[in-house]
Length: 300
Image 1 (tube, one colour):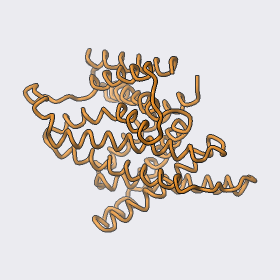
Image 2: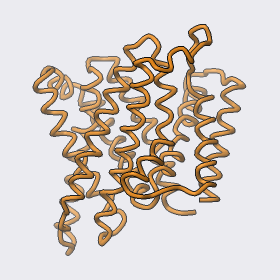
Image 3: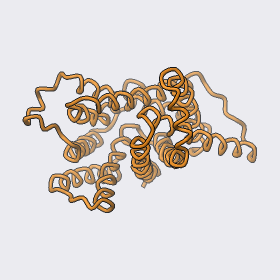
Image 4: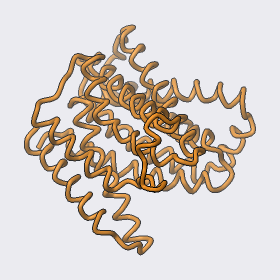
């Protein structure tokens, strides 16, 4: 089994825990932007200090960064922020479920983005496995129930926001892989750590500027929520690091496809911790998604 598989699975698990913590924060004093900012501001010092000690205690020199590396970092980091904003806008719409459904096209869009940006495609077997997983995700996702006629909203604002967020998340994933590929002379773990540090640093700067101009009170609120915010930062860092290691090894489309196992983790959490009943539809969705995961592990 290639290393990208366990790292992707760990990334999905850490991401599930981080979302639970962020949901707790958003229910208290933080806005959506403040909750997102907490993720970055509390994870950056940890990765920065870890890298600093590594270079101080080792005899390795800091690598020379190319302009292409910084281009991937800036575009990827900004795409991720904008994608998050579009998802937040979705939640304000009455028919946001339609948009969320279309947001699930993120994995297929990762294939397109990978071809355009890096010239990386996927095999026919891999694409079939991806489609199988998307089918499982759609069954597990909350679907529109507006008279059952979701097709009426195919050209709605929610669909545009959903597809837009999916595409931006896909672009960010491909750009992160592109950035790690610019550091091929470095060990795998170091490549992931350096790229992650650069991305989070850029995101902290961008979001700090945004909050300072639009909602400065949220910066104070993030500091006041540091007891939980620190755990958000830690789980975010662990999850992001695992994602970046996986991106450094494997095509972003395959990584994103395998990462959909996060939905299964979320459902298991709801059953085990909140005693919620699992439906037959969810059982079928889990079966399809697990089949996709097994195909990606043993065939790719």
